[in-house]
Length: 277
Ligand code: SF4
Image (cartoon, rainbow, N blue to C red; front, side):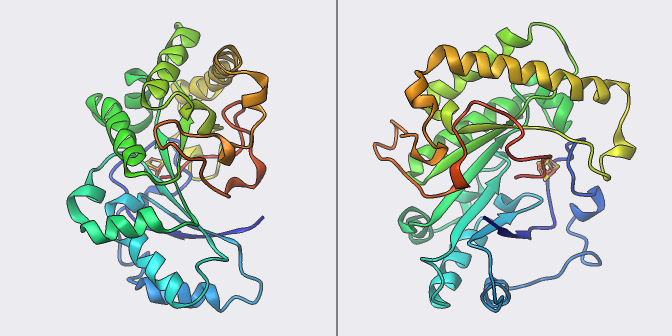
């Protein structure tokens, strides 16, 4: 399955492993262009062999929350909504979705059947979050609050997590604590969560130092701990489900048609790198 990606050329964080060059994250008009959703959809619809998945990414798409309902409206108007799976990334850093959108726009999000949204947890505890993003430690807990609001919105929600840390101490226990917090949001949310493998893409290379090199190695311990937690908490039958078929108990429905057959929760490296919202 192929996907076409449109990127918002701005982000409020600067994760060291981001595979987007930092000079493309600063809303620099010399390196980006102002385009209306209708313009983006027209370019997409004009493709002779267009991708089935349209990914609204970044940077951080949630800095412009109206982008998503506007794209939904433009896709519908162009007559390609039902044949296009719309996916958007979210770095779980802002409440703009609820602060800035109208009730009607939120309804558009709720009622659009071919839409999925992924929230990316930038670390599995405060230490790893601060190390990864250089943001404030309190923003780690805020990611869970925003994910709670996304679940409450009743849309089709998934999660990513990056397991890089500068500290080798107690990784299994720390991963266990993270999985606990996901389950507090929804008992099955870990099965809709994909650990991302951080890789050495060319923009990352000049940002590397010994600690970051250590973190890239430690993420594999994190994956082993993650897999152990998933195996301990869920039956094989549930683990075998496609990630889009894992029911969210908080939503009371089984959502989705996305993600091309990923199995839920159990393995990293299904998506790579991470600008990913
Ligand atoms: S990984 Fe995502 S949140 Fe982090 S700097 Fe890149 S775009 Fe921003």
